[in-house]
Image 1 (cartoon, rainbow, N blue to C red):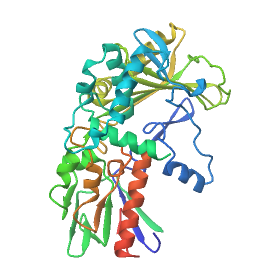
Image 2 (cartoon, rainbow, N blue to C red; image 1 turned 180 degrees about the vertical axis):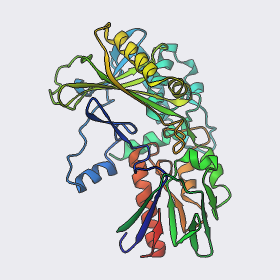
Image 3 (cartoon, one colour; image 1 turned 90 degrees about the vertical axis):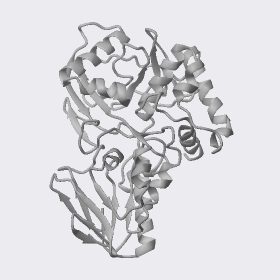
Image 4 (cartoon, rainbow, N blue to C red; image 1 turned 45 degrees about the vertical axis):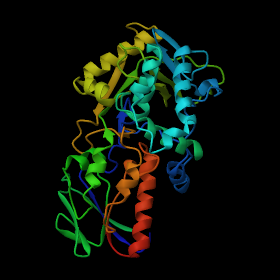
Amino acid sequence: MTGWRVAVYEARDRVGGRCAGGTLGGIPVDLGAEFSHGRGPVFDLCAAAGLAPPRPLVDYAEDAPEALRVRLYSDGALVDGNGRDVAATLRMRECWDDVLCDDSWASDARADTTFADLASTLPPSAQRAMDAFMAVEYATSLEDLGVKEWRRREHFFDARDCSTDFHMEGQPVGVVAASDGCVRVDGEAFDCAVVTVPLPVLASGALGLRGVRCGLLEAARRVKCHGASKVMLQLSHKVWERRSGEPATEGRWGELLLCSDEESFARQVWLREAAGGVFIAAGFLAGPRDSALCEALTTEEAAERLLGQLRAVYGMGEELQALDAIKVDWGSDPFSQGGYTSPSVGGCGVWRELRDSGCDRLLLAGEAVGERGSTVCSALESAEWAAARLDRTFGSRAVAD
């Protein structure tokens, strides 16, 4: 888009929303998004800015190099999480393959169901492994995870490898109303507007949308968005083993650990050695059960729980200590009210409904409006779609975001 005058209204005193950064042990860390799915717009932005593209951190394929493989803590043992020679993950992946290969799930005639129902015939160990994988991939539980939308997204991933004024006053917008050939943002008139409020905030009615079609908020409420918490520790020791073929490069992730044992605190833990020999563990707790558990704890309590989990998994005692800790709870954050959207029963195709606001001047954007869903790439693609549509419809005019 060229020739547009843009005003950005931000409720926080910073930009970025749930893509936020902090410092732990003097090292920059991500408090929100931990990694990028696939090779989407994030890579394009890195190239445009002259930055090196993100390096591969992990590969779920069974024939992935050992240095990029996932490890799973299951039934008291640390095993190969990619599924090679592990009965629990093999059965789990067989269930996934059955869904991906069964085209009847793409038919409107077949009723949607949850993964809890689908996995009910699997052994308990396979159910726990699937619950751990889905909790970290989609910030939800098997009881809420819809099979049809999950299948659509997995097929989608498999098929694809101006002048601006900022208003950051720490005060959220109250009403966005489209009428009489303009859009009014708390009374101020603009030609067009793109609303990027997180879906749970939008669905709650905290932002008053006027002049949109009647079913828009109902569509938003059909998509689940649970809490998501992160607990990050600076560790006194490196706990993971360097496996064959892993380059000794500072900043590389040392391990992606998935934990399916019932007593585990965080189901996903990223471990890495940062510059200067700083060892960082990032525990992720998402979905209605895990995020509520984390939100009820203080930072010190959550840090102790994660530290105890790492001691148990890697067979270490009191010698492993946490030198610093951060906890962030996106579910209790008033400006997000959740982590990111997850595939849900009745949610298949909602992203298309969210693109139809019923008003050409007022569009929604965000990860739930993108075809990928649940990713930073989806949010970027939705913003590009909204900008292109406004440009085609109205040409070079002013727009509020």
